[in-house]
Amino acid sequence: MDQSVLLIIFIYIFHFYLYTNFPILQQKYTSGGNVLNRYGSKLLFSAGIVICALPWTGTATALIRGICLSLIAGNPWPRKSTLISKWLLQISVVGLGFGVSIGDVIQTGKSSLLYTVVGISCTLALGYGLGRLFRTGRNTSMLISFGTAICGGSAIAAMAPVLKADDDETAIALATVFTLNSAALILFPLIGHVLHLDQNIFGAWAGLAIHDTSSVVGAASAYGTQALATATTVKLTRAIWITPVVIGTAMLRKSKQRTTVPLFIVGFILAATVRSLLPQYAILWNGVTAVAKQCLVVTLFLVGGGLTREVLRKVGVNPLLQGITLWIAVSALTLAALTYIGLA
Image (cartoon, rainbow, N blue to C red; front, side, top):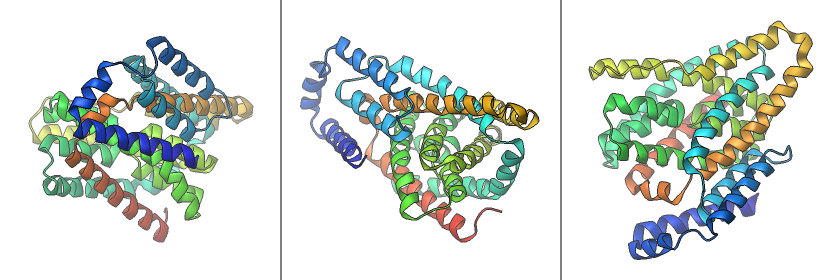
């Protein structure tokens, strides 16, 4: 794992430096095509999907493998893999609902509600200040802040039409958040083990401080079963706030844009309810949960495959600095609060 982490950090720095400082080398490098030919790239990517579908492949390993293949050999199906990863993630989240009871979902949701409300408010306020400090474009800054506060890419996609953000602003925000998501999935479990965090505390921390659902579930899955249940519930409780915040922003800006509660959240709650009402089929529900966990591993491989050279080119220095500073601040303050106050 340590070698894989070092490898991906090296690849990331190399590509970012290349595209930022040497446009001539960039043109020569990209005009020559991928290191491997198109068929070799497809073969490697397909093999990666198959390997990640096997039960001994973990979430962090899948993400790193996807990133490495994408940056070195190229992603032969960037649009398709992005679309499939979104659907597969939603299916996985619903499947994970069969692994928890509705009572635990309600209790965890209630326990984390205050953290969620305070965290979203403080993150948006801090993000606004950091955006001005780093002179990030207004829409880009708001999208990064909103993605950090609630639900990463989903929140950014929902808010972009309200802000009337153009494609470049949205792409920069998504690329920034996506890059930090990849780092979070690797770093959070390591930090959790170093600090000997309780699984419930770690799950709540991941659910509150990591941007996208895929990375939240991936990090928590690597940490433990109870951490996974807590993190998923906390994250989905937080994701529900996409709707009221987007509607509120639309009203303030007199925009006609509207949004709804994501259906996979409803599916997760229904799955937990079914498990609670039909406990005699526990073996079946556990089997569905196991399949969902492995689907999540494949999802993270596809997510890693989305970190292409084009994405790296869109990440500017100022948005990246804002995103990193905001994320570190939110993560540290959230962990401190959970450690010293705990869940209700």
